[in-house]
Length: 348
Length: 270
Image 1 (tube, each protein chain N blue to C red):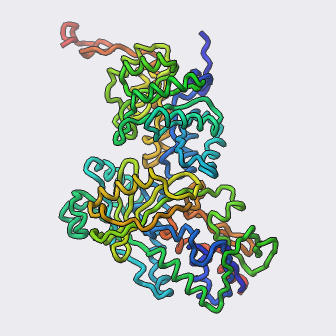
Image 2 (cartoon, chains in turn green, yellow; image 1 turned 90 degrees about the vertical axis):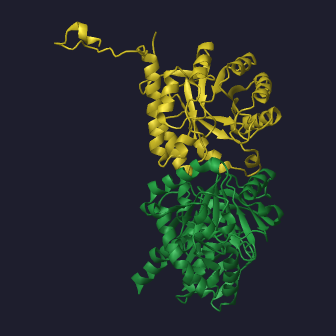
């Protein structure tokens, strides 16, 4: 079939990778270049935090997340970067004066999913055994099932793979005005396809009026003195900090969450919050170098949950909010099974 | 006296509006805008506070979020959360008046970063200016009686002393001070703002004769915000009804409502 995908971000790329396995002909449209600088999936740290995210999300994300974690290894295998996936667990800690945050955190998780009862508390020795650099912390939770995808490597490698693929045409820097049933409207021109996907994220806001952007700011630091191997969160009454390790002592520090569609650079206040929390995690971050700051907006719907809309010859996927990497593979799988594959099955 | 009742609640007046609910609710920290909307509806609150974080108010700022709140048709009480000086708070209040089209402002000037204790000096300074500029100021303050008096002298017609620090959930730390403020200002509108962690805290404050309760975290951070919103609705109603009904006096001994038949009277008080 001749299929068009509007929006070549995380969801668009995953759609293309899945559809190519069925031998379909793919045309990608994106307002951005294939580097994906504007894509939320390029700003993301790629955490697969199916438990920790439940602190402020509904329990449905748990099942979606579990399925995605099962799907990621083969997707990254398809791209030849299996090492971009890591599942060695994650650490949740807090300062002694904020230990009540840890209690609230675990109580919330246990109230939402029964599996959370398996999450164990670590003492200083337990923390030191997993992450020697964090052994000054005396209390933490270890969540063995969690991990991360190297988001930027996935985005980059997926772009290379798709650009090289003979069945793929990619219109870069090519904005789409509307996605309608079986057609893409761009530059006032309508092009027809056997099926179209709308995975434009915030770019779809003209067609989805309950879509909003939630500003997030992240910092990248290089810290040769720090050795943390697992995604680590620090709970605090007001700031939520995570540290996601990348190769060569690079760490992604995030993320603020502000109800705004402002994409201007990171504010001084947010930088102070993120960096003081970072420094309090490990004094070795004092001499780290801030190599980059990134601001972007997460596409979110009112319930902050993803939405799949099936129409005649068209599927829309949106609202992955702050859970892109945790949910996209499973959401894409479900969207394909309930839409185009079901239709193919019916006509075959 | 004729009482106007709505849903069984006596109507009351605040800042020129007549309301039936005595619960003021915050709009932060919910898992999603949808759960916020549902929790607010279930709480029955008619006033919702909104933080106007300065960086979110720019062009294309958090319009979607504001719109969700506006669509609910409730009275919006913008607040100056995040301000640390009178000057910042005044600018934020002026901005809020533009954005929300209301002269109501919750004046919150923080003096301590960690426990978010209000700064009485800067709060007072800002209150003086804002009252003159025609704002209806809802000042967030500690339970200090003298600070309360100064704010009233500055022209505030509403006071919002804390129960305990914001987000601490510790309830009414100093009921004696709160009672002293209530007694000192019998006709002023008094709202306990901050520190309420569970429904029983709200009941206590309302039983003391406070006019209303303002809270956010206790609902938004519960495992089920909608259910907790319902709990607080009843708590505030129960506390108010108790206050209006007039409570029996406490006694230092047990006093059976009916003498126990068959027990000689000289044994009944042993």
